[in-house]
Each structure stands twice: as C-alpha cells, then as structure tokens.
Amino acid sequence: MKLNKTEHAGPVPVRRIIGIDPGLASTGWGIVDTASNKITYVAHGCIETKADCPRAERLFLIYTEIRKVLRGYAPREAAIETLYFAKNVTSAIPVAEARGVLSAAMAEAGIVVREFTPLAIKQAVVGRGRAEKVQVQEMVRLILGLPEIPKPDHAADALGAAVCASHTLTLSKQ
Image 1 (spheres, rainbow, N blue to C red):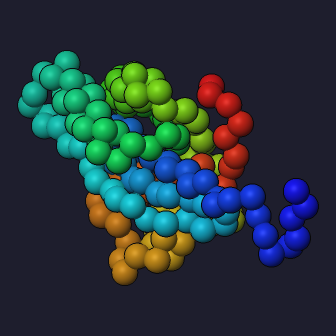
Image 2: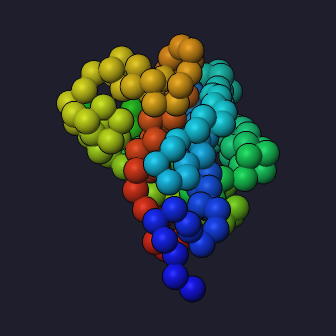
C-alpha cells in the first residue's frame, strides 16, 4: 500500500513517561504523554519521608508509594537523573539508596529506565546545559502548558526529566 503525504498507517503511538527526581527526604515524580512532537502533561507529585523515621522505613515508603504511582498511571518508560554530588559524598548515599528502590520498583513493573545527567536534562528542556534551576522549571511550565511552575521543586525537576526523555527515542529495553 502506498501512502501519500497526508495519509499514515494508523494512529501515532503515545509514549507515557515518568520522570523521577530521587531523594530520601523528597522524591519528585512527573508523568507526560508524548506522541509525534506533542508533549502532554499527565500528573506530578512528591513522595516525602520524615527525617526522624528509620532509613529502612523511609526507603520502603518510597518503594511502596512509587509502585502505587506506577500502577495508577502505567508509564512504560522512566527517566531518572543520574547521581550528582559536588563535595559531600555522604549526602549522595541516601540519594543512591532511594534510586535503588525506585529502580527496583520500575524493573518489577517492566518499565524501561534511562538515566540522564542534569546537564542533559537542562539542555533538552532549556537548550542550554548550564541553565539555572528556575529557568528549567519555567520552561517545563511553558512546554507543558501549565498555568504555574509545578510544585514542589522536586516534582518540577522530575517533569523536566520526563520532557528530556520525550525528546529521545527508546529502541529497546535496557
């Protein structure tokens, strides 16, 4: 069958992507749908844990809450920010642990997980890898057509990761 320029083989598949901004105290998540060159906002939120709770309980809470989000929204792809730490390695350990339980939940759900550096996310969202945090959040708002910058900040950052992933093609499960 020949297709002319105005016809296509069928509807463009929608990719549902969850972006994750991992943290032990606060894990942001944001979900977008993308088809062709259109990105549509779906939802966002934050999983917060209390500092006075044992670390194992905090990690289990992150795991159980993200599983609820995954079941409720059924994303097929995930974008998570790579671990970044400038000076304090010990502050990176709780984030790494949170990333571990998040990755386990996504693997359990059969979700393709891709990692992006903060630089890559800023480049994809703003067009400049050294953009300020507020610039990224404002561009997320504009790209998704939201009336205001998503709150809290971790959820806005997670939406930025999802937007970044929407600009890339998933060829296979990693």
